[in-house]
Amino acid sequence: MTLYIGDTPRKIQRWALNPIVVTLSIILGGLAGYFSPETGKNIGFLGTLYVDLLKMIVLPFMLSAVVFSLRSIFVKSENMGALLQKIFKWYIASLVLVAIIGIGSALLAKPGSGLDEATLRAFGNLIQSDQSTTTDMEITLSGHTVEEHSVSMMDKIIKQMIPSNIFAALSNGDTVKVLVFALLFGLAIGHIPAKLSDALTLSLETIYTACQRLTQWFNLLLPVASFSMAAEQLATTGLEPMRIMLKFLEVFLLATCVVLALGIFAIWHRSGHSLSEVLSSQQESFFMAISTRNSTACMPNMIESLIWRLRFNKSEVELLVPLGISILRLGPVVYYTIATIFIAQLYGRVLTPSEIMLVFAVSILAGIASTGMTSIVAVAQTSVVCAYLGLPFEAAFVLFVAVDPVADMLRTAMLVIGINGVTALICTRPDEAHVHGAHESTALQAES
Image 1 (tube, rainbow, N blue to C red):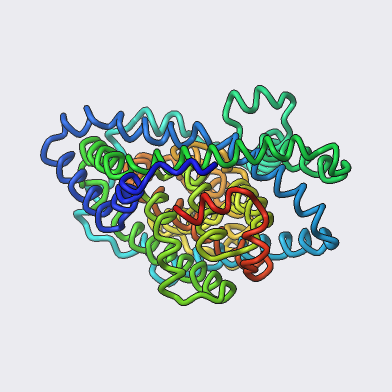
Image 2: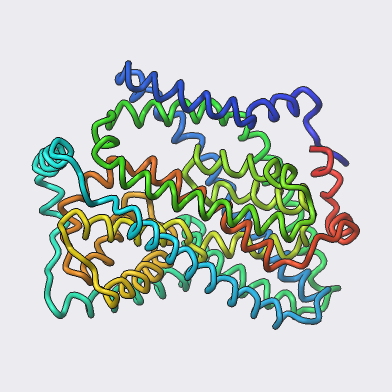
């Protein structure tokens, strides 16, 4: 039985996800927060509520999608090893590429060099006004610091991956631990005879479809959420931090555009659709990314765009998108490379080739380790990279925090479109007949 909610809600959903509507909501919200800060702060809870609603369904959606997809791949594919090799190859290549883009952008544009006297004075005033931050972010620059950071980072990555209690991981919202469990559980299900696993497969399909329906309902609130989040941000920070960090944001935007262009090109090259069709398929995921600044909340839209709009292999997409969200941290890697070089240039430090290679390697590790972190904690990870070079990141921490909502939009957009691009490169080319026969929910998605 089709559970579609009718023509009128479908028209409302198309209106709510229209790029013009979302963009106007962000602009009007920013103006409201700037000219009426009290109003902006009072309505900020609406954006938080919207993100929480989306995050509420992420874990059951991911668990059901990954387990079902692995089971389907084992049943229908005779070359699982080849798929794993492609995943490893493209993930490593993508992380290396975005790190090069970040370093190249920062070295060529030099965002931390040549700042005028007024900007430097304002920079100093903001740093001095946040004495508590510089105390909390103290870094000991000694020979043992690098080793301690290295050990703690690897320890952190391992602890983030292995769940000692899957129910605790679900309760705490530990995305990576749930993903690891889903991968292992899906591998086990794939080795169980189909007649024994069919009942579980049907249950997972029901959960998956229900989560898709909830996502469609929640998307109707996107313009309101965009307005409230933009209003709260401008009411809280104002425009002064934006002016001081303008060159950093310009370079980060440039790197973001390069990554987005490469992601779109990869999807277009592999999908066989026209460029306009590819751009149209990705616009909902893109605007969801910059509005919510939460990559896991974008996961249902990402999967829908690749499967139902572009006809990529359903089982592979449902496996690769959650995996990419947790491992393929493209946005944070670019952010750490540019932020570290920006700080070096700000203090007149000329990096040697070996130091640049160090920034390259540690930024990739720090990016992977940022999985599941809040935006502020993810920003603080920059101190890990800076500590290897003896750079005082703690002094500029307050400025990075002040402009992070803008930077977080760009990081999330890179993650979402970049992962879709890498997924398109890994997946087999679209096969419409295979997709239509894969799940009973195809009819439901085709209507929407």
